[in-house]
Length: 130
Image (cartoon, helix red, strand yellow):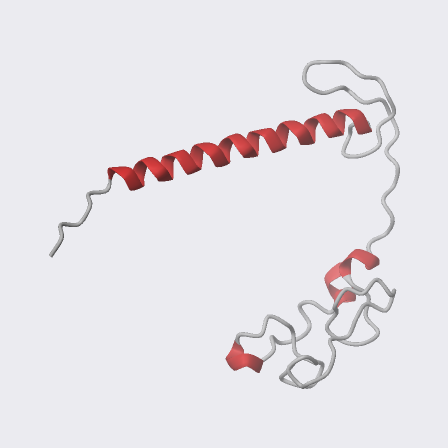
């Protein structure tokens, strides 16, 4: 339903820019509004996101508002919590801790990747001068 509201899946890809345009063509045409020299239509809700055709709502605006989850937070990192659940099964404090841990893990992975790339580049033989 969300894709239908946003117009995704119902329209052909734009043929503009030699077939490299990332937008969908306007209904009944083979090019998007941008490639035809106009402005891209925006969400009918007024959020400013682009849609395929005028009068449509974007996927974000077409979603129903999130329901508040009821219950107690189970805690995070081996600590029990008991606060009210706010998002994704956790309270705000536990959610922030989970996001901090995820960011630290991503930073550690990025550092390990960069070190591996540097080691591989250092191990490559240098070409002999001609």
